[in-house]
Length: 321
Image (tube, rainbow, N blue to C red; front, side, top):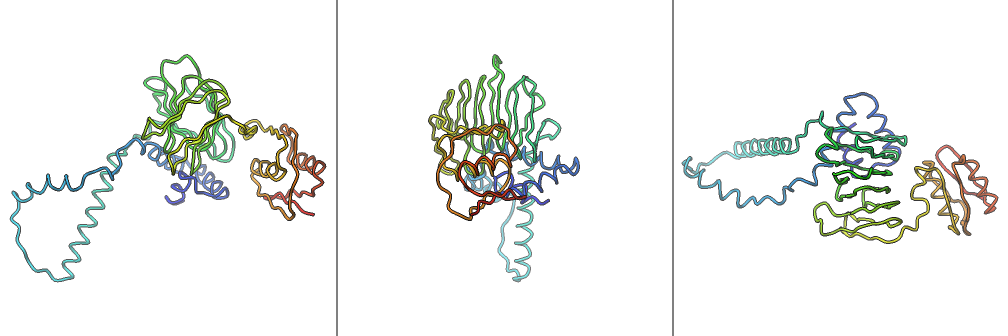
């Protein structure tokens, strides 16, 4: 498994099949797991570090130049082209080594000081030291310091999860993602973080959602409210939650009220990790509840309601004549 795959996972660019292969690679041995955890932790820590593009190179060079002039006598000399190119190559290699070394020094975090939980291809429950309960959706991860609940209640997160944060604690509960931060005292809510945006839906209590690099760009959410932070535009859009099935991945229950049939089928297909193929136009709408039912049973009910013919195959749900 190469570094490209790990980075693509962290940025949300892996396909479902690739995510499964990555999960299998992580489970192969402890070394793979540790490598993934370290890279993930570095990735989550990086937003809090000063960006390299903020360094004033000209100012730094001007401060060094006088010392160079005082210590070295410069003289011009002609070099053969091959020797000149060789020296340039050596300097480039040296510069790369120095930059890499600086990166490692700045980003070094003792791997033994953190705990990381990866859900891979199953939903996983996590209990934190303060009593907070988290349910991780598939292919999600949470990382926290071993001193959690002593000096802070801060976690680093990617994917999708349901949080039930314990109340009455002296420390605020803080969730860090790639570009945004969620801060709560005691509440329950759902977070979905993908490659383009983060969505928070509050079930009880109140939370703050803000841009990590700009805390003025924020919004406070209360019960039944939702907000999405767009990574590209840095805009936060919020309002009342109208998605009845935002927790279906956890509960296994679905509720539809005059929902277009094609949307119902897409929701069901996504939950069961299948692709929907429409061989005919699909119209009409569906009102109903599916409560932890087998897929074949759900599709049979949809067939009876819509007069469609639906095939459940290994990787596909196919609607045909």
